[in-house]
Length: 252
Ligand code: OAD
Image 1: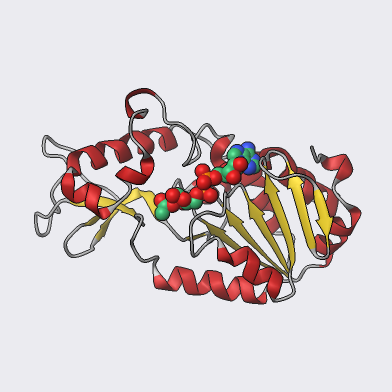
Image 2 (image 1 turned 135 degrees about the vertical axis):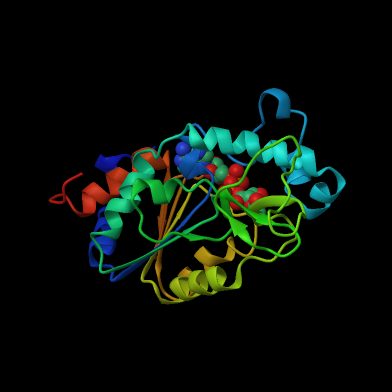
């Protein structure tokens, strides 16, 4: 497993010299905050449901209350969680490189809470809801007897402000992510299984356009190839190690 002591020196140099660093994070980056990754077995009451059967417009149409309650459960998990050293290292990296773009597939808002200034949330944010009919977004709502609660303006059911399977990603967020992947000189892909498009294409695009690609995952083996570094390990260990190795004088 890679640790601070064996971060490849070529990677340390590449990060130190990078002018634009782009980062894509997935559920793995929040695992050490106690939030189960999307494809982990679910626990308790929800163990018998497959998330891919709950996070769809069809599921919401079929059983809006079930989908609402699943998100309410996840919202509760997120509210009780705190950013981990991986989130904090990314917030620190943002202040150490000339240009920085953070793109996340996570809906938990932990990057923001860690101090990252403008994470691009490709899949939305679980702490917001929106009207399922006319799209108005709400940050506060009343959770009364009727679930999902009705939109205060039109009475249609409220839904989480996240992207479900089969739905389009917000086009401005996707465009910003695409631009960053095209223009960055170093791209970090952290804690994502790379199974869900279009996010999964971003690291490949960056690498094809000449960026150094760094993959951090529990599920890879350590390898170094032309402009490609795979680091096997926990993001909560490797990200702080990488940032400290490249910027040893910056306060943690
Ligand atoms: P997944 O749950 O598919 O993958 C999490 C990845 O993180 C796996 O590859 C794990 O090996 C890795 N991992 C777990 N713990 C880790 C740790 N401590 N450090 C480093 N890596 C770790 O999650 P995503 O790739 O984020 O989309 O899933 C992408 C999208 O698929 C989600 O945003 C969601 C889902 O379906 C929507 O809801 C639209």
